[in-house]
Length: 366
Ligand SMILES: C[S@@+](CC[C@H](N)C(=O)[O-])C[C@H]1O[C@@H](n2cnc3c(N)ncnc32)[C@H](O)[C@@H]1O
Image (cartoon, rainbow, N blue to C red; front, side):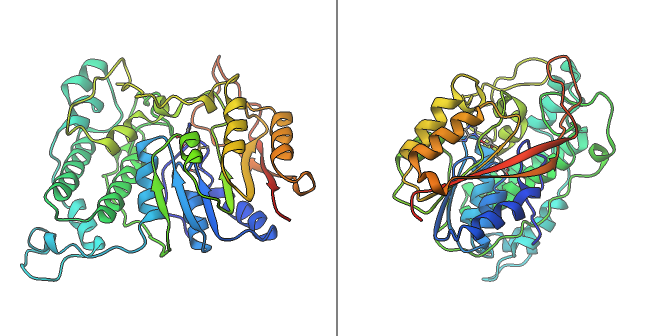
């Protein structure tokens, strides 16, 4: 089954979906599912396609965009409000999302915020030598982002279409970003992908019933949930904070329409707006994990983690056995090629090219 959530993302489970699905099916779990760390929504999307009623949530706004597009949206209506602009005809029949994406891909570059600050052709970008996007691609991102926002503001597109177009833009922008996968730094010369022209692709949307997206802290989400079947957990593994590693996708997702954010330093970092996570802090992640397992009204837990994670295995085992039925506890493992966003540095030495990915499972019912 093809997966179209194509951004490069730390912890993205796209390559592990069959492993996760296999364990869920072997344990005969079905019904409702909650994915409180949904990221690119790869798992939520797979669960939806398996018939789960999925709630997908993430603390980051781009995570909400992916969850809205791939989990909550279940069919994409035509957009009659765009007939004149996109199809150059007036009438009841609006363009499909395919037509709209083709139209957006044909727009000329029109410089705005991303061009000004994240390409070397803009004043801010030039001052700091920022090379996240070529001037042309940055101005294309600006134009598409502004146009999508304007269409929504005047009611030409519905929310599902808005988020699907935004997800397509986030993926397209990531594909031409001059980074090694995270935005904590940019490459000092243009890479081949960055020289390619920005091109949006139409996201593949699965039909599904009763699926929804949230943008919440995981503990806040857990406190609001009615009893449900599967809690799929994929928290951060280490002390890398997502707001600092993905500040540009977050900016594109949030836009710059109400007030322009202040940018700091060489990388144009934005304020983290309280999105720094306890799950990425040794010393705090253990309490957060125990509180989540204790609070959420789940029947089954399936948790992805790996052998380099900051929550000790002894804690995971103790908590899951305490809150679930001991005899249902299992840990499955899979050796996996490491996602390398950057090379070894003084601060971090990778142990090797492979990492063991674990799935911890426990149930409250047999
Ligand atoms: C390992 S990634 C999840 C990857 C996801 N399963 C995928 O396939 O793309 C962890 C996610 O947790 C999110 N996160 C971190 N702290 C959070 C919190 N306190 N509440 C909700 N989400 C959080 C991050 O933004 C990140 O998207």
